[in-house]
Length: 144
Image 1 (cartoon, rainbow, N blue to C red):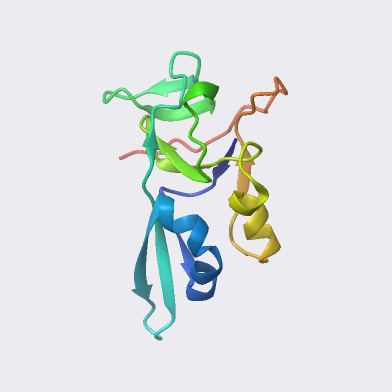
Image 2 (cartoon, rainbow, N blue to C red):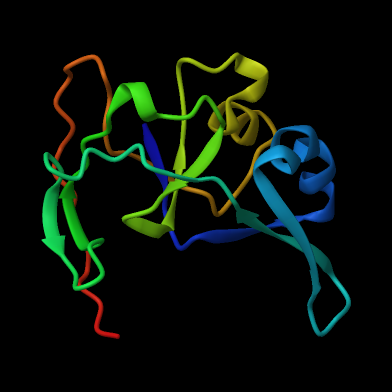
């Protein structure tokens, strides 16, 4: 399982939106936005909000709403992980997670993004169901 670094949405060019449209449309809103000089982009707002996180085994700091304000180590329940290329979890709705492995290559967002030469997108492994240790995360604590 990968986490797309950043917040709960990201922007892509119109060309990228067309190239990935079949993969993105079922799991997101593609919201049009333009820059001051007229460049068109699409904000990809990932919609699926799942209950896939094993909150009892996830290591982090809880917030008053029952979510996590900081996560050091994610643990997912494999039976609840959606077979979708992109999704969010209810305890951290501002993170986008990228599924790899159980999806066919044409539905693998990371593989497609790399094949298309995307820039400015980084992926961070946060969990796997193979028992391979994933380094703990170091995140900046944010004050709201």
